[in-house]
Length: 266
Image 1: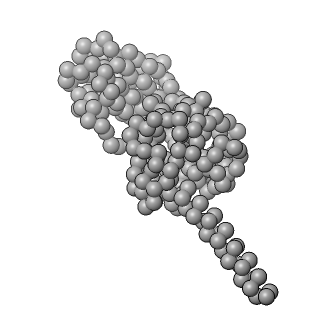
Image 2: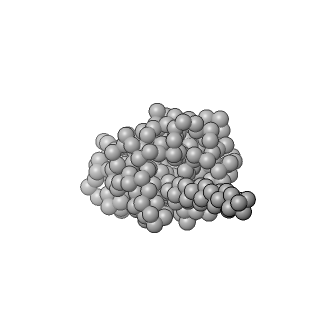
């Protein structure tokens, strides 16, 4: 009789362990793979083979949350099939700050201090204190290394890992894939000189209508915003008030094209 009871207990424990493993695996295969703080658009990818309903999940930025169920996807479905993407606009109160924020996904909004409920995490900018975000939970979960931020290369950023064991800032890079509008704008502009002294010139090589240029430093801090809407052929951007160093300039046009380039101020 004791043997039977012991077998039942062991079997029950095995079932519970299997359920916990399956729960972890289901969550682990859902990853944030692209983040654009300028549009608040985020791409989520299912690295697994089974469909995962993520309509019960929540975004969290700077300790404010938003239910994915209330978001209409830009593309894809919240019933996320294996190998598929869904593109969403972050709907938290804090949103995605252009220069610094964290972003995580949780299975519940009951208690964001529970690391086990975190599905994925990333942070960028190095301009807000740890206690304003969810880094502690991400470190506990094994998703991130304490005190590390995505820096330097301009947003949007893309995740390059395998979706399971590859976590942290080293697996995030500036997105290299450009849209059709981005490609057109990229080929329609010339920027010189680089390195630059007191002036950086933006020259139109095609008949395009520019919107603005925004300059950031390597930490993602906004340095300057320049109106380009009246540019006929060329715009001279004054750099006299900018310190020496490496900067990024993000240029947009009226067709939704976005181009980010790096320059050096001497």
